[in-house]
Figure 1 (tube, rainbow, N blue to C red):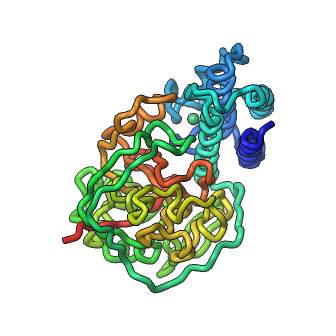
Figure 2: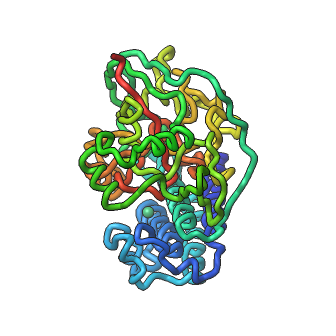
Length: 430
Ligand SMILES: [Fe+2]
């Protein structure tokens, strides 16, 4: 195998090790639905194998379907998550056998494929990038399911850099055009293409994500009881959900606690807030005299290098993420404290834009493909970037570097709180 193929094979192996580690639990935990928001864990496991079969074996490799009769079961668009427990999905042992059988043939396709072939699925191993990123995204979803289950799950407490206090609260991004999206990153999805010039007025953006201390101040100031800070839809959600703070937070006397993978622990006040939905983030921003950044504002502050007039692959530049630059790849099962990564700052000096919490901010109406043809998986990019959804940017501590770059886009509903999402605020220049 060539070096490029070896690298792809290593990434395939790493993501599979991760999926198997998250599904080592006993069978009962794997087949049960822990929340109507999530699939049973064993559904996710076989779904990533089925996706790999569809794209690598059938679409790129031209191989006869192995298990065509299960395609419908694992088609995420045919059955919403809440209804998946009623599907005749494969049990844990059979699911593991199935994904292993697919994977063996995937490595054969990798061996045979020409990475210089101009067909869009083959070129630079795009189809392998597609399935590697897809599986990592499902792994993050499985972690959210484990968090919701209240079971101990797979908690990692690797050491992270210490936070640091001080420094400016906001960073100024001067007016001017920047290139949004990419034409060059080989594994970028269709919804990140093509690179397009976007001209923005000047604005201010928070240097760091909103922290637990600041968010607790919002709650203690009566933020959840004051409709002034909420949009009508947000206030409706607040009243019908009965939410009084982020998901997994509790208060005893004057002390805040959080539940993390089945453990209750004092809330670390110097970490970015997680488990708030878009409506809560939006209300906080209004209370703070600011607003959420638009998607273009987020991406310019994160990826644009104004001196070289080009986009960076990561906020700090082109070098691969290291433990000193960002908290990625589930090194620890929580965000790093605020200010922990001065070396990971963007060209404008904005910090922790990847690998803490995703940024939840942009408003509705972001289109998926921004002009390019939908390729190859329209069910990801066409369906989920309409008015009903909010765009997620940045990547959380649970995101793998393979699915993190300054142009990467994800989505969810504005009421979702189980994902490892936080936010930061922005405001116009004047
Ligand atoms: Fe999927």
